[in-house]
Image (tube, rainbow, N blue to C red; front, side, top):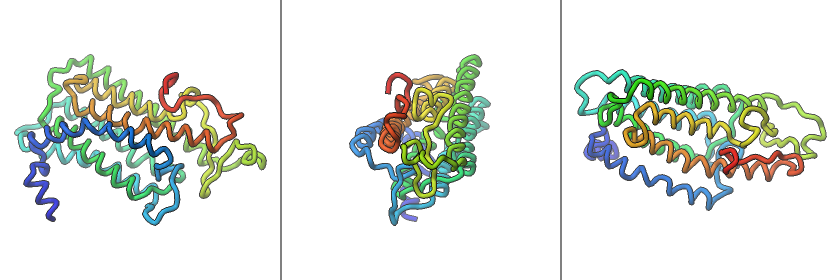
Length: 286
């Protein structure tokens, strides 16, 4: 109760313009987490790199709770905006819809479809909750009235939306490739000995093939970055839609180190003689 009272008195519930601007001022420093993640290359207690801990929670439950915070915070922030006197502009409704489309897949559809998910350490769940609440508040404040896409031309909204949907499709497509690997637990008796298959806690890992996996180990990551870059375009661009721009930057800051960790995991677990040469997330670069 004291925390809620503090948030109300500080203008965060509901989110005032002053507190929203303060949030953005400090949110831009989030990329400083990237060096920390790179300095702890073996520490990411979730998914295939999870390990046994008394602080673990079931992967699906932790993921759903963590990711649902983002769209719920966005919608709450939009509709409790203290400066909003009328209905939302249609373009803002559309941008909110795109945001919720992404999180319908990410927070609900994806974990439900996954045959299994590794446990998540409570630290990761809490970190994800904090990230999603801040991000949902930043973009929700903008959509709720502190920003405007009223002057964005239709052609720009259309291009940005198309890029967003393309990125969302790419994300879903490559995640389905990974699901197929987990669904198919069959492999010949020599595969594990030869380093072509890895098993852990009842889960089977194989080298993913198809789509952008030809060039990178994490094509679903770059697909998501493309998706949110389209979102920035649809909302008026880098300067006009600043909260969405910060989202893309902050995603890169936390997901790129993770992609590098994933690449190292494959290199460590599988036979190097059969492992294809791929970049971590960005074809030909990193």
